[in-house]
Length: 246
Image (tube, rainbow, N blue to C red; front, top):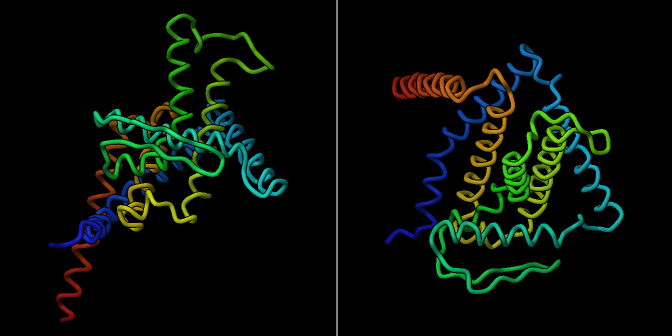
């Protein structure tokens, strides 16, 4: 029998074209929005960027001052909670939940690569911000409110917190991956890294569609299809040249 890890390694290789096309589509759409449509001048872009920048400064500042990023305990809690959320989504049961600054774990009767890798592409605190915003919108016109708290409107707070929590997720993910995480080793490091990268780019693409007025799911899909066709055309030309060379 072929080891499952070897099969997943091959699957990871076959996912690379999808990774390329999605990455190309995201950056093309982002460049078009920022240069041609002035997306960089919108308050959504600026407050998301401000939140990301503030967290990044805190992350590296805490590493410089304390030797490790803080709050590490909060990250570990979110990491293990994300495992648990995906276990419940897969109709599994969590019988034990532990976390501390040194690490954490859950005990469950269900396991797959989605559960193992979810903390590396599922920014649970960003989704918590969105849930709070959605619940508040039921009782209060958050999007149309002009009242300010610390000179910032509720909608601006939304994008500020989304930027900070997303940067929290990304910075800790990049910091943790080189530390030999068993989550990645269990399903093969190469396959795990491909899935993590693919899902994070997909999340960024979703945020771009939701945040940029001119980018829709339809337009992003058309751009993705064009890039996929271009890649297939390139692969066909390269294959023909190789066959002729033989």
